[in-house]
Image (cartoon, rainbow over all chains, first blue to last red; front, top):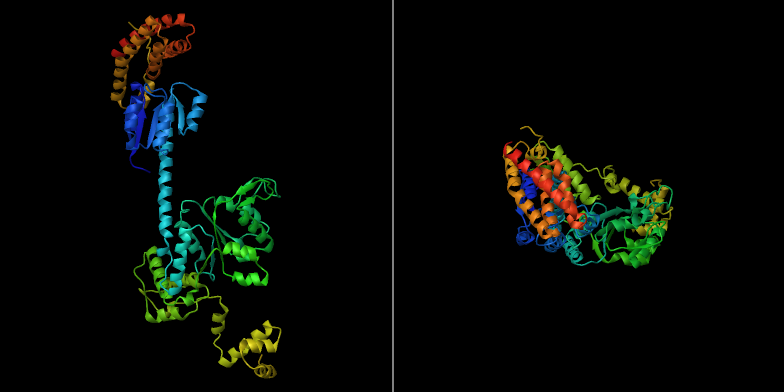
Length: 448
Length: 113
């Protein structure tokens, strides 16, 4: 909360303003400045008081006009109106004109003003806190620091992000799991002019398909069993901010056409509703699938694909990012060490080599988990090869861990393809680029 | 001479939160300010300037309330109200008389408190 809170008391009754000043000054954080007329007060408005108590009947100007002048100067200054008479009409007018509160002079006035000032202080404190937090968030998603990497493929990504930040274009992000699609989306949002507006992330796979329409577009009361109140959907919630549709490739085909309509018309109809609601948010979508391929297979509507494509950002998998693996590993080690008050940790060259060679099917998410585990496993300030354990669910890796002979591996692979293609030998031979006879021989030897 | 106490400083005491200087300051302020307002009401009465009567009575309200002069609470309000609406104007001189009489006693009591 602000340490020093300045209150201007504008009151032509000296007796009363004396009481107010004394009462408010009982709180040592509050500094009170008294004014007995509007002119004097308005001259000092540029000192930006944190709050004003304003007598409605001043000798030189009506309270209403003074209030307007304050609001013209800075609409953020909270003004508590104090009046000798109770007059509902005046009260309503003043509140509409932006007064924070309307208080009638009687025995309880001082307590009411005290409370009003207390509330204002709390509110101001919260406002400041929010704007500070917003700054922090912005810093956090400053993409030059939140997205790390020097590889040429990442440089391309940075260039695309910069383009996305400065325009309003729809963005589609593609990348394997764990490549940081959501971080890219957030970076675009928090560096764009929409930064102060909401960022709403929706993971399509996380919502049961029968609920997704109401989740995205909202519903009216009574539109289905359990809808006992109107609910605003994610599109409306994001307002003038950004909606992030993650795993868009998993959306079922019916929902796709509904989404397409909304994107085309820039308006939606809540489930069970009649009226349309305009939408104003930026759309960022992401998927780990090859959407163009899904379109070819008929799983994804072509028109929706083009509608969402906009500026495509392709995040390279970690195994194609060269030295970035080590840059990122070091970053995560430092981050983990700092969060847990451990000293500086280093990677031995063998450990570096091990990290470098691994294919990282889970990408950065996996790297982070592996590296954090290393930090825990090591007993010194050096991370050795044996501290690194991969728990990948990736099938290649599991297969390699079986430590079979090359012959055995070969049989395994051929069997896998035969199973996959209904024992179509010709097809499998073509795909593996080996002779048909090789496969027939293996079948004869019952090796597969 | 023992007469009933016409004022009550309980409210001021509670605001003062244990600081007697504040109460003294406010009492002195009341003693300084009020006679001038009374004069304004009298002048207004003589010239039938009801706006002046209303304004002076209006300004007297907070201090009369704050000093806990309960017998004048309504008196001041009626002077203000009648002058504002310009009705029952004939009652104002009598109300004014009650006002000055009571205030003289209050001044006396406050000086000797």
